[in-house]
Length: 178
Image (cartoon, rainbow, N blue to C red; front, side, top):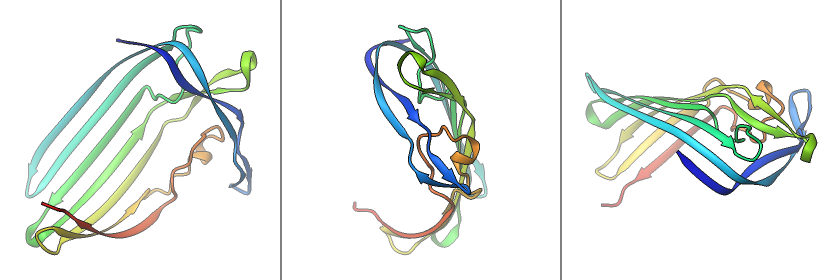
């Protein structure tokens, strides 16, 4: 149980403007001060070797939040969020991973001052895949696709105050210094 003073939260003053599914004008969000807040939560993490070079890792966070002045839930803090990763390490330096990021229901304060209303935002998930090849002791070539399902948060709710990058393909060189 964490009691906090002077915590920043978001208040959406104006939703983004969309034309034919594209944002043509950003919304307006401001930060407000929450004088007294409470955040209670728990986090769970699990990792396992599955055999044949596969591994699994899962983490989950649960939060219960409260603006102690109003009794309402805090904004921008999902009740539940999880990350799942299935990885593979093969021979000759090959590797691959599939990741899923899941964000549960969260709230946004919509409106201004006394007219503001606590509004739920929908859950969403993002999926990413990559494959890598170790080229030397400290260099790896990696290619992949992030946001496989091409999730656009504004399609789920026009109240989202941020965007996830649409599906994209990437290639990178990773270097480690020992």
